[in-house]
Image 1 (spheres, rainbow, N blue to C red):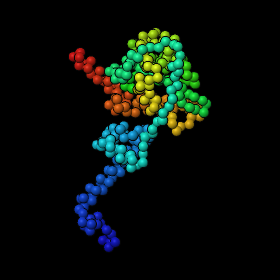
Image 2 (cartoon, rainbow, N blue to C red; image 1 turned 60 degrees about the vertical axis):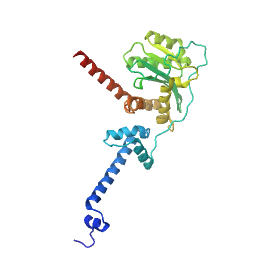
Image 3 (cartoon, helix red, strand yellow; image 1 turned 90 degrees about the vertical axis):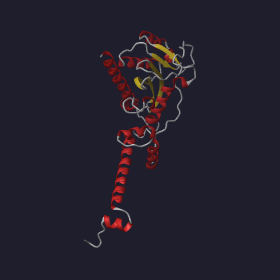
Length: 285
């Protein structure tokens, strides 16, 4: 053996540690490096949008047994943090003399079935071409965006189009409660007639009370932080493309929601219908 060659066993003997202990330590270091690499991978899979409360469930899916606190410490060590949204102003105009509807929802945001209660609101996105207005219809059951529409105008046609989209997509369910603020778009004759034609019930927040529509407000807060703030959209078409990717691909199908037991809206609905099918089969046997 070369006198300059140092073996593992000789080095361990010199340091007063066992060879098995050294190999166990090296394995732990390898596993730790892999854990950090996997955490970075899931962090960037979500485009830096999420923090420890959500990412810990992705790590569990990868087979790691770890707490939210541990994930938080690892993110801090890596210098990674989730995007944080800024406050934004309301876009709807409630200073009008149009008829309003009572607050039938009354902040009862927990729903046991799909297509029972939809909440809706409008927000804005800045582009170099001018404002792009976004209206969404959100199903309180799973928090899924069941319909949405954009326009360069913030008018009744925008909310009517978003509602048409949601109804067609969901198979024209009967008796849906549609909750909004008291914006003139939602109080318009066209929108109220549209709800009546489709046997829907209208509910409205109290004037100036954003907490009455907190779930939709929360969605917009998340959307602004994840895809709007820090971005510059050259055209409305470009912003539309990013919105489609965020809403249809990421938010509805991938992003976990605490209200859904940390499942995505689509996964939560699939679980509901799977359990429902099992109940029906069992019930008929």
